[in-house]
Image (cartoon, rainbow, N blue to C red; front, side):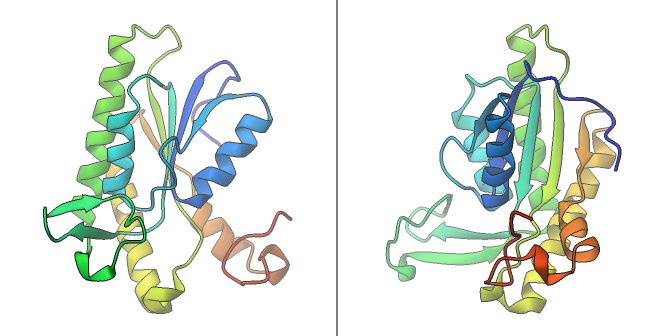
Length: 199
């Protein structure tokens, strides 16, 4: 698909999300773009993406790329807080929950609003904020294939909601659809048949 804006090499970029954000962001870094990639590690769900944006106010990107992996979150039972990483602590300390479409969109909207305010405060001469949202094409076998599809569907609906509610700011890039519909030839998958190959 043709993008509705161009990314210049001098513009600050922020990639936050799943391992797909790592892979995509590294390509931009290798090509000498001013990209910050998952500064606090891989974040799979919208709440964790918001947590990253809250912690990296110094980046002030003109372009932010959010790659959504799952709507599943882990809540520390003791505090009721969503954690970004379970730090290999015992599973009994956490409760797993699925975010709704509105919850996913709400966390991401807060992240977008925060980035907008950071860009405005910096008096950025690089232009207004643009956000690209994509859903990672990597399926989660641990949820079962049906469960994985439900998770991806929730994320797709949240992404669509954000695009509609933020015209001119949020764009959707169909990575999930490209990988799972256009590139179904298994040559495009790694040996685990879940992750895309470098082809």
